[in-house]
Structures are given as structure tokens and as C-alpha cells.
Image 1 (tube, rainbow, N blue to C red):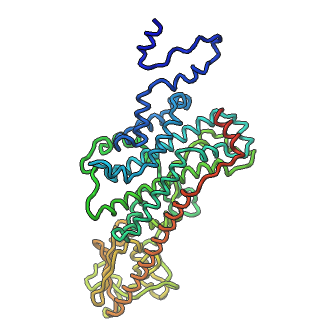
Image 2 (image 1 turned 180 degrees about the vertical axis):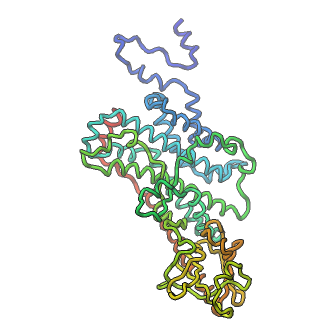
Image 3 (image 1 turned 90 degrees about the horizontal axis):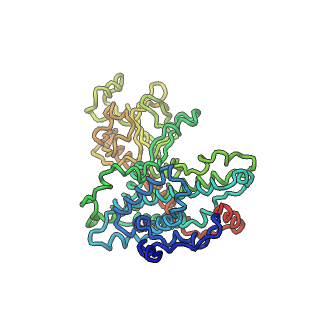
Length: 499
């Protein structure tokens, strides 16, 4: 009868041998969970590894992220369900997939936008899973022993983690892919523009960080909030829950490389930001070596990844982000040591600008000074009595200058994204509908100003292209470096993992 009951259990293992002691556990008892079929866990692993459709992977990441965010599901439950090791392996496999094969294997392959969304959500689940694992291991350790230790108990995990290794490899791959596309003729100078757009999409001004240092009241902090990319944020997103026919077909024709460049930049910056947050965690845990320090007293804060990543110098330069506020209209600047030209507005100027010319000879065209700096262009009005001082009328970031052309003594400058230019430009109608027109004393002067402006713009673009290439090469080299675990930490990690 017992045998018949075993057969009806649907493949469950036979009852373990009788125990002589209630508190003793046999090997069969300890291994019994390995033989129990768990189709839900198996299905989630398949989807998180990218072996199902792209939509399934995104939905699975949303489900797992919701579970990991629930404090009621503690680390012991996740360990009992074998979530830590099995899900980490699946997520590592997802990051290391051959996306070219994924994108071209099906008759209706997923769009690059869908691939990017899948990479973002699954990589974020990996970070959330790593945080829960570290927190679980940390809570099982002797806090007093950790306070007295000068070593980082998590260092061994970062050296042996499959997901960390996959993150480094994937970041190196996408950095190399981005660099290849940046050198394509079809992409060209658009690559720098795409990179700037993606940086400005991810990074934003942070009021809290800006006011941390009241002595630098003019400094602006830009940060990327990774929690905006948590998969649970997509629960109410119809685009993620409903398959859109147009969104699931790649673009055709010559725009393929352009769309691929946008995709590569998006994933590269996302993985880079993710890695920066993890590196910040490691540095926070290992930088303090004084045994008397209190780095382990605040347990919740210590074993938590900070999902706010402050923009570094490379991001600020490439994104054309102004960390120091531009001079406002009405403030004065000094012309000494700067490149500038005397000019004026066209004949048909606004009444407000006409008032600036009161008391001057109407035949002169030198009532304005156009200052060309390496990063900005200023339209100013000289101050009476001091030829070296000028009042700012408009401040135009050089990155917004699209092109320039002369028409006799007139110089026309096309400016993109007018909303990013100083707010005072529209007030004086210096920039209108994305165009600024200035008049100089002769055709030759107009040509000289255009040549100077073009040279400054070309130098600026070359500097940005060089910064992008340096950043990509650095990411490629970091991902290709083999990791050599410290043998001295092997025994300590074994004790930490088995705590």
C-alpha cells in the first residue's frame, strides 16, 4: 500500500528511512528537495535566462522583482527555494546571450527597443538578487567579528559571482559594439548626439545633492536614479504588458545601424551605471580598515546598493552638462582673454533691442559683442565707460549649434533644442524658432566670424568624440581583465558563506 501511495505522488521521492532520532537528519532528507519537480521555478529560470520570448523575460523579471522587494519574503525562504544560486545563473546567462542570434533567428524578431527593455529589467533583477543574497549572508554572521575585521567579507562573492562576471563581460561587449558603430559611415557624428541624448534621458538635476554643499551654491549635481528602471515600475505600463506589432519588428533599410547605435548606447550606459553602483558598494565596505569604525553598525544601510549614481566627469563632458550655471541675462562678463567680435542685430530688430541703441550712431554696427568660448557663445552689450565689461543678453551652449551660414554681412546660426538654451534668449528675440541672425560691418567680417564659430564647433565635437572613445575603450579593457581571487580570503569567504 505504501508503494502505491508513492506512485500517486507524481514523481515525488520515496519516504526517507525511519529516523532513530527526531533531531537527526539523514542525507536523503537533506537531498529530498533536489528531486521534487518545481515547474514554476523551472519556468521562471527559463524565462530569466532568455530561452523564452522577450516578453516572457520582461514579465518574469517583473514578478521576481516584486518578490524580492517584499520584506515578508526573507532570505531564508529564498535560500530554501534555491532562488539565490539558480536565478543568478539564469540572469548571468541572459546577460551573456548572443543578441545578434536572438535578433535574427525568428521570423518576427523582437525590436531593439524590446531587447533593451529586457536587458534593463533582467540586469536590475540581478542587482536586486545580489543585494538580497549579501544581506542574508551578512545577517547570519557575527557582527562583533565583522567589526574587528579589516577585510571586506563580500570581496570573495564579487570575485566568484557568475552574475558579476556576466555583467563585466556584457558591458565590455556592448562597449566594443558601440565603438564599432561609432566608426560607421552611416552613423558618423550622430553617435555623439545619440550619446548626449541618452545621457540626458538618464541623468537629471538632483536638488538634494545640489544643496549638500551650500558653499558651492552655483554648482549643479546630476544623478541617475536606477530605481526608475526597477522592473516593478512596469507593472502598470501598457507597452510592457501588451505586445505592439510595430514595436516587435526591427527597422528596415539604412536606418538599421542608426537604431543599433541608439540601442548599444542605451545598454552600455545602463550597465555602466549599474557597475558604478556596485563598485561604490565595494568601496564603501572595504575603504574603512580601522577596527574601531562603525561601518557595520548600521546593518541595513551597509548591505544595500545605493541606486543613485552621480554623474562623473566623463558623463558630464559627453552629455554637455553644465555643472556651473551659465551667466544670467543682466550679469556682466569680462572680455579680456576671450575671442569676440563687434556686431549687431539685423535691421528689423525688436523694440526692446532697439532701446539698446539709444544714444549711438545708427550707421555703426558695433553695439553688440559676440563672444565665442570653447563651450558657449554669448551675445553681449558693452558697458559704457568700460570696454572690457559686457552685459549678457543671451548664453548659447556650443553643443546646440547645428550649422551656420553667411548672407552678405549677415550670419545665420541654426540652434537645436532651444529649451536648453538660457531662458533669456526668447525675451530679447535674439534666438527665435531655432535661428539667430547677427549683422557685422562687412561681408569679410561675417565670413571670419563664421569660420571662427565653425572651428570652435569642430574642436568641441572632436573633444566629445575623443571622450566617448576613451570611455568605451576603458569599459572594454575593464571587462576583458581576468579576475584573480585572493587565496587569503578563500577560508574567510567559506566561513561567511556557511554562516
